[in-house]
Amino acid sequence: MDFRFTPEEEALRKEFDDFFKEEMKKAPPQWGTSMEAIFGIDECWEFHEQTARKLAAKDWLARPWPREYGGQDASLVEQFIFNDVMGYHRGAGVDHWGIALLAPTLLFSANDEQKREHLPPIARAEIFWTQLWSEPGAGSDLASLTTRAVRDGDDYIISGQKTWTSGGHRADWGFMLARTNPEEKRSRGLSFFLVDMKSPGITIEPILNLEGSHLFNEVFLDDVRVPARNMVGGENQGWVASQMTSNFERSMIQLFAYLTRELEELVEFCKEPKWGGEVLANNPLVRHTLAQLAIEIEAGRAFSYSILWEQMKGGLIMAAPLAAAAKALATELVQRFTYAGSEILGLYGQVKESRWAPLQGRFEKEYQLCPGLNMAGGTSEIMRNLICSLGLGLPRSW
Ligand SMILES: Cc1cc2nc3c(=O)[nH]c(=O)nc-3n(C[C@H](O)[C@H](O)[C@H](O)COP(=O)(O)OP(=O)(O)OC[C@H]3O[C@@H](n4cnc5c(N)ncnc54)[C@H](O)[C@@H]3O)c2cc1C
Image: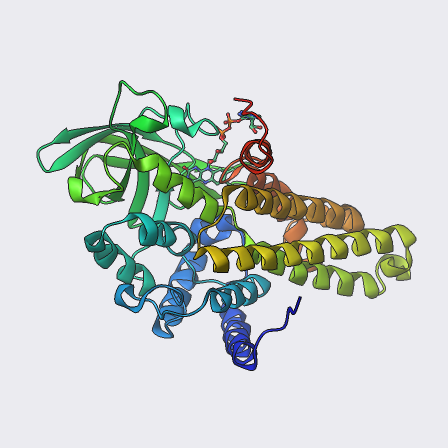
């Protein structure tokens, strides 16, 4: 198998690399890659928006989409390279929900009018999106959700409550699942809506996480009118589109690039003499831990190449078991990496961002945030259930 990129692709990689190297020098000091910083800190959000507009001006946000919807008809490999470079630089400017989740779903499931209305503003970084799926009583078992949408003339009237809505307080629009058939308690009664977050009847309340950041929100919907033309995929047909969205959410390719950078910095840290002249890299336990992480990150990168290959054969479609495997592998590796790095840093790994904190205090922060990655977009247990039932052909356990 030949893993090399073409000279043109390598030139493109350099262009992306030069951009992010320069651009990220301007990032606010609190910038990491955490969603908590992007959505919780005003300077980080402004920087994210500004970078998004610069990326849009270069036509880099939506390269593989058709030109008529704001894309460049570019190959998926170019998108892969972009994600790889962005992940490595802890880059800003990509609306995760709009670009990575909703847009590919619309390309497959929306009608032409919906694509023309909603895709170009995402490509131009004019509209930012959020995901309105989870409810207080429906997370892993999303198909049991109870938010109701009732047809009224040319509109649907939506009432209910959503929770854990990441970045909902910054978003212009949200994509939502709501129940259009109350007789059908499971997935066959659900529809997929595009909702303007400024619609009358929407109230957004913050939920602060353990670390004190404002990423999550509760979103209350009181008789919110949504035009029927904003329903994607037909009444009671929303589950098919939503599963496609979930698979895109779970591909996680840029996390391996992000870990590559994190490992490089941890290794550099271990090479320098530290407290009392000790060089951590001389410690056999530290060395073995770093080697093990390097092996796992490299295996993850190879896996992300194979996903790209499958997507190229299948025309972008992410197979559910593959997406579930990528999600579990990447997010659990982030957790193992963070815990191992924190142990290597010892008590200094627990120091908050300050002149005393090694590596800008990232491990202290990430230690608290990384378990959330295993839950966001479906927990590791659910990913394993999907791998068993859809990948290995075992009977469903739920
Ligand atoms: C960082 C973060 C960001 C998020 N962002 C969003 C967002 O933007 N929009 C949104 O809609 N939601 C969001 N969520 C919510 C997320 O989708 C849910 O947390 C997730 O689906 C799990 O649901 P739950 O929290 O209700 O846990 P539960 O479903 O109550 O699960 C509790 C525990 O039981 C286990 N479990 C449940 N069912 C099974 C089963 N059948 N087999 C084995 N184990 C099982 C789970 O694995 C988990 O350990 C976010 C969550 C996090 C942590």
